[in-house]
Length: 200
Image 1 (cartoon, rainbow, N blue to C red):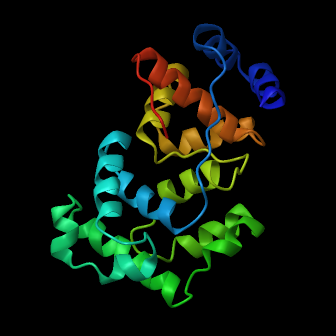
Image 2 (tube, rainbow, N blue to C red):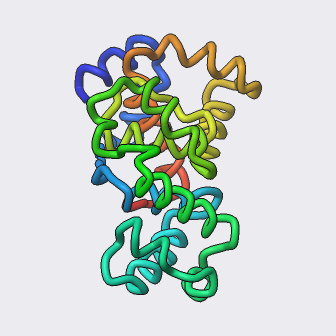
């Protein structure tokens, strides 16, 4: 992380100012696998805390959090855990893809980020934001900037005065090959400014 921070601070003094104001961010990780992908589906467009509460209810509803058990739950079971109809279909779709071997999650760490994206994007309900977060937190990919993330986008708007997504894409290329570290710094600023702390 130190190497990445040094590189980014040279590229843009904004990163040095973030560290000066809020310190160096923690670099959390998440376990690889089906469980985390299901949790990420629940996290789409809601707060992490809200998604985690729903996830724990769902986890308590099954003997084991595996594709077979999740697929066997009824839609009513999902609804009683607070899972929307749409996200229920996404989680069941993911479970089916794993059972049918349309996706082999265990093989993803051995593939390039582009290949991981190509494979996961085929599963309905898993878009670029979910893939970006999985790449950053679970596979420790070092050069990912999730421009589908509201906090990242809003922070870029605020700190760099860039409001167009295509311009953001072009601008952030200069942070390569450390865009994941830049992402953590942007999240760190976003949370720090709001006096918020998130446990991923």
